[in-house]
Length: 335
Image (cartoon, rainbow, N blue to C red; front, side, top):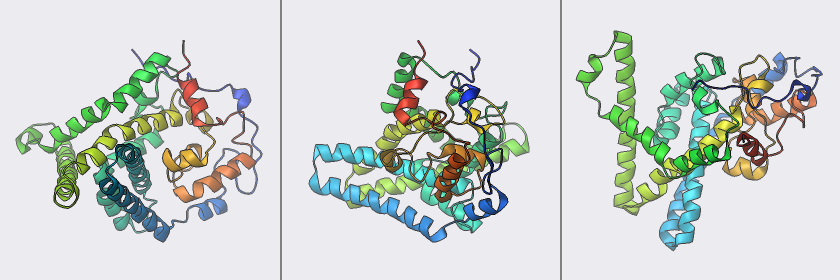
């Protein structure tokens, strides 16, 4: 079945007339001076944020091992799902080269500190994600299958959620990564042209680096902590909790929309509450329309940019969803 797009696009009447000012232009983009202010990268604060993610994870592991309580484990399981979301939110920032102003540092941290620990090939993600920004719902949109055909029925929506929650989606993708990691040189060199061979070789080598990181993490859990800590409190939350979070966030960004020069037709906007910012969309991922209007603005500046978009009338109450629950309900509203 061909992909159906635009089922969630709101009527043009909800797109209020924009009142350009000294900060926001008629198309929603920031004025040159305002953009320069927004584009400042907070190197020290970003380094502290990364360190805090690992400190939080360490505290969670310590509490679980010390108290050895089933209820504590359940809470920890959910919080480590958030840890993966935090790591990958900042990996996304590094993919845009907005995490550190030094490019070498930005790419090293994006790979080894943020991406690889959460099974993500940061360089491969960057290529795909840049295509997403260049081709929103276009012929080369890499995520079209994720966003198409909404709204869906309740049965279809919950079927997707069950696949993610029980690890079926995560295991299918992880299994492909494992196959890539053990792929032989002979098979690689028998594929198409030199460029394809090189690209494949880089991908396979990266997967080996990713699994080397996780082998070391597993050994550490055996030697220092507990032989089950890696599987039960790192791998499983990634395969289950984070997969649910990733789908819910992705469809809340673009589900059911379509290509258009107006970003309000390509991207949802949801009012951000403190609890969802803490758990579901860390590091300002939720201000997504601001991110798509100008992908060169670091995450710390997105709330200020979004505030100015509201002042200029580009984002209004009738266009913006009150909360994620309202949007998810609309995404599963087809009879």
